[in-house]
Length: 117
Image 1: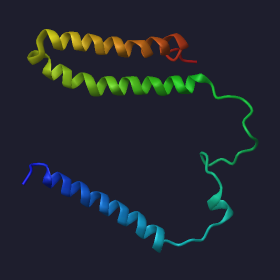
Image 2 (image 1 turned 60 degrees about the vertical axis):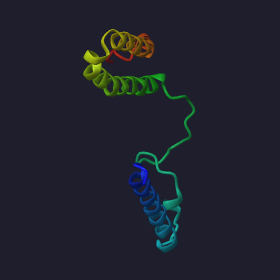
Image 3 (image 1 turned 135 degrees about the horizontal axis):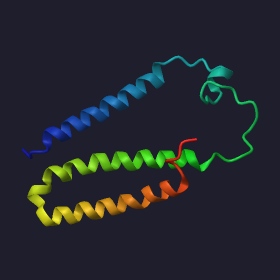
């Protein structure tokens, strides 16, 4: 019996349960479409007119900023825990990782995401 058999059984049962749940709601669920239910929903406000201009880049820059800090926080902690065991190689790896994350950080800084208006 392979060691991964219980994990594969659990994965199979989870996929089967998910598929069965989606199938049951599709087959057994009520089907009463109305114009309100079929209309696209955007922030609870009805669209007055179609947008004529592009969204400011600042929204995308702020999203990139959150992604950068999330990746950094999730990745630096395991490296910090293993730093003593990895020694010099771990330090070089941490520096390379910091340099890779510094590129979008500098881009966001130059775009003015840190200046409050």
